[in-house]
Length: 245
Image (cartoon, rainbow, N blue to C red; front, side, top):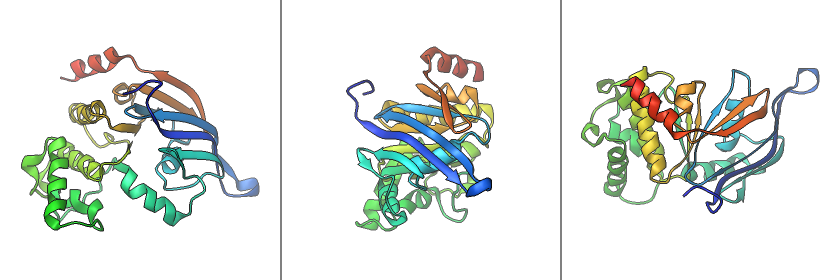
């Protein structure tokens, strides 16, 4: 599904983001241009302050650039209001974070149902969709467990299921293995890989080289600019899996 014929999910041109004014102004992005096609899995890397978080916020429709353009599935979202961005973001983008962000007193199933809280349709249909999402991440048998009854890796898989439940065009994962040990990290990255193989477009923010190797492409940011954009050899990820077993 990748290649020249695949449609663009992300098309960004000359993104500039500056925080503050005058002498205190800080340029977080300095003319970033990138394109991510459907069914790609791309890792974005860079040191603290390189612009990773700012880029993710813009690509996730959480913020707007000062200049430049950003099209999500062909629609220019770079000049939309915050309300317009929210209307685009909720159905089209799924988010996975380092800290899982699960509600502690609700079951895995109820956590996955949360993005559909304002959706039309019966409660039974919503529950069915949430169960299907849990099945995709291998947790159908943990649907009624609270987060405290799940391991860290299982909690992250619930968070992935929650991000998937609205069938978004793009999955954004911000340091998704940051709170996990090596073995559990590999297990979670297997989930991302299988989702990608099924056609999901994934943008992964990470500072870990070993995790980035699970992607098919790595983009490196430094001082708000892209300094490297390269494919990842498949055998690198295979070697990592073998070493972690």
